[in-house]
Length: 330
Image (cartoon, rainbow, N blue to C red):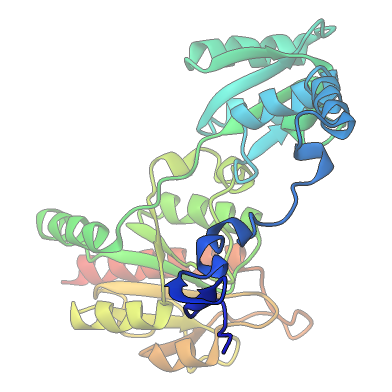
């Protein structure tokens, strides 16, 4: 009787049994994976064509400029482009790290001023060819000059409150913060910072989401005040207000339907955080409920609302005046 390859079988009709050939050749029958693509086989003409194409790409001036630019500026880096904008940013002392000038650029007073100020501030001044500077600027409207901005260093709110409370004990003035809820315009933020610094506030509080950030535009509008007034960023404004309440702070929300006028809420002499919303939507409903009182600014019926930075200036002035009056009457 004949058996399968996996079993023993007879040879030449004799009862002697040997191992079947299937077991002997099984390894050699195994596959070696899919056939490589033609371009991956070094002996194939498709591979030679691929190598030649890569060499042409490596020699391309545009691609070489792109690689150089990508080493200098990332997609998340903030930049300022154009002669007027760069000079204004440098004059406003916006924190910057590098100034890029196009090779063989025809200079004028603005570019000479930019180079002079950058040199005085100790910035790196680098030349870049036209293709590279197009890539760095992400635009062709750069006029041959690009300023790379340093990332803004936000303050830690807990440390700001510690500092403000220590100063309060030494100077006899209660801490004062401004919180912005839903203010997304960087120029508004800059103007609020300028007003807050003018009236001696201890800091600005921004939520991480749906809010303006400290860009070069905000810095310029602050007219240098951003260099002196710290800005803190928090994950959740409502939880932050709860934490501030635990530390003895009161929250005054600004809204057109306020029950009291700014400066006359009764909380002015206490540790205070003034909460401002956007001009259109105002304060978020949940944030509204976290406020101890809602205050309004008396305005003409012909005007529906005030810009956030204007409202901040008025409320800060009213609060400061109320504090001075309370101190003089004590």
